[in-house]
Image (cartoon, rainbow, N blue to C red; front, side, top):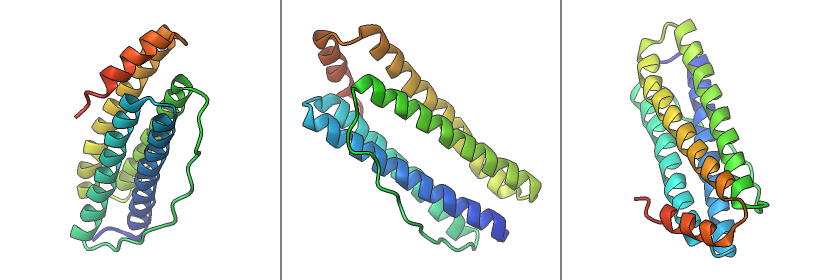
Length: 162
């Protein structure tokens, strides 16, 4: 059974993961509004992935005999200046999630909660991938600038995500 500190921190991380899903869904709606359906698709897949992360923690806490207490999810922004600016926000958001996972991992170490440390190793690896992917897309968007033809090519590329 996890300590109350671990339980509380995992519940906070569950909330953060659900907020991420909500944020990406809001970004997807924005992209649909401006007819970038490939970006919208990519963001919907990302949203589902974040729900999966939240549920992984939810199930983990339940399996350890902890209590899941769902918290309020803040309203995400609803409009974004451009796809590039949006991916700047995504990268920053993923970096903040990484910091939160690292803080939770440190707490697990301090609490000598080895099972939570092992579970969080998956999240640490996942965050490396999340930051790299967001950074790669941002770099491409920075390179192409505001050129509509190349933006549409990028949109087509992002539509292929499974």
